[in-house]
Image 1 (cartoon, rainbow, N blue to C red):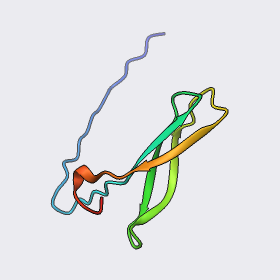
Image 2 (tube, rainbow, N blue to C red; image 1 turned 135 degrees about the vertical axis):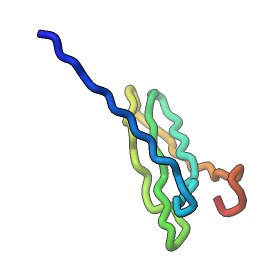
Image 3 (cartoon, helix red, strand yellow; image 1 turned 60 degrees about the vertical axis):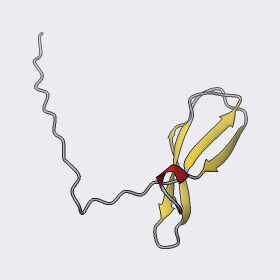
Length: 77
C-alpha cells in the first residue's frame, strides 16, 4: 500500500500587537544528559512562576538547577 501525504506549512508573522516575554534561562547541571526546561514568568509580579520540563533527559541521579537572567535583552529581563 502506498500512501500520499500533503504537507501544508503556514507561518504567521508577528505584528505590533505581538508580545514577547524573555524569561530567565534554565540551566540543568547533573550526572545525566539531555534535560531541557524553561521558566514561566508571572507578568503581574515579574517573578518566576514555574519551571516547565520539556525533556527529562536520561541517566540523572541528581541535578542542580540554576536560572540565568537574559540581560542581553535589556534591564529587568
